[in-house]
Length: 357
Image (cartoon, rainbow, N blue to C red):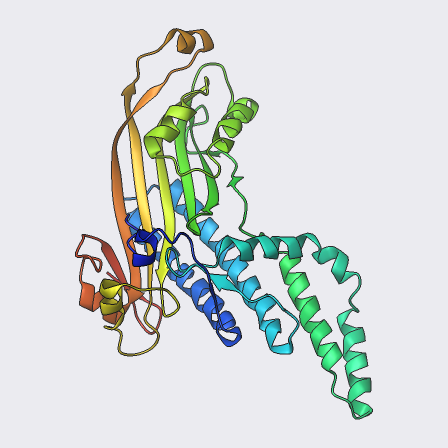
C-alpha cells in the first residue's frame, strides 16, 4: 500500500502535525469512531470472502474496538476545551495517516496513569449536585461544579479504557477442534509511530515435540517483542519466529488501519477529485491493507537448528488486499478501484450506515 505519495512527504518534509480547531475535535473523534465501526464490518466481509482468517479478523476487530474507545475518550477529554479546562489542543497527522498523532495517545495514557489519584480529589456526583443547587439558589452559575462534573466523567471513563499506545500481545487461541490438536494462533497489535498508523498481526502456528503452548509461550513472546516498533516484512517475521524451537509457523497475517483522508488532511489532486464526488455530507475515505504469507515447505536446517531442535519454514508469496471505505457517492464514482485506478475492494457507506460493495 502506497501511503507516502503526498508532495510534502516526497519533498522530505517528514511527519507533520496539524492542530485541529477546538470546535472540530469532538466531531472528528466521534466520526472516526463511527467509521472504524463500519470498517470492522467490512473486515467481516473480507473474512467471508476468504481474504482473512477468522482469528486475524477477530483480532483486528477487537483492536479497532480499543481504538474506537480511545478516540471517544479523546473526544470527552477535548470537549472540556469549551470550558477552557483542557489547555492542550489535539493534533493530527495531515500528510500520512489522517489519524491523531502519537503525542495525543501518550498524553492520554499519562492522564490515565493519574486518573485514580485525581478521582479521589473530586467530590462524588451527589455532592456535586448539592453544591450546584446551592450555587443556583444563591444566584450564581455552577461553573465550578460543571467543570468538576466533566472532570469526573472524563476520569471515570479514562480509568476504565485501555489506551491504545503500546505494543501488546494477546493470549494464544487454540484453533484445532480436536482435544489433542496442536494448531494455535497468537495476535499482537501496535502503532506505527512514524506514520501514526495502526496494525494488527496474527500468527498461526503448530505446536511440535513435547512442548506445551502454556509452558513454552515465554520464548515466543520474547521473539514477538523483538518485532515491536519495526516495520518488518512478513518473511522477516517468519524468519525471526523460526527461532522458537517448539513451534512451526503456518501463516502470518497483518491488517494495517489507515490512512484516513478527510477535510483536515493534505489531499493531493487524485484524492481531492474522489472526495469531491460526495455532494452531500462530509467527504472522507478510510483504508485498510491486508497482507498474508503462508509457509510452504521446511527450510534447510543448519547445525544450530538441529542442535536446538528448530524446524524452520520458508514463506511463500505475500498476498496483498486493499480495502477502501467511503460514502456511497464516492464508491459509485470509484467503482472497484482506488483513486489511482488500482484494484481495490471499495465499500460504500449509505446514510443509514449500511455497506455496499
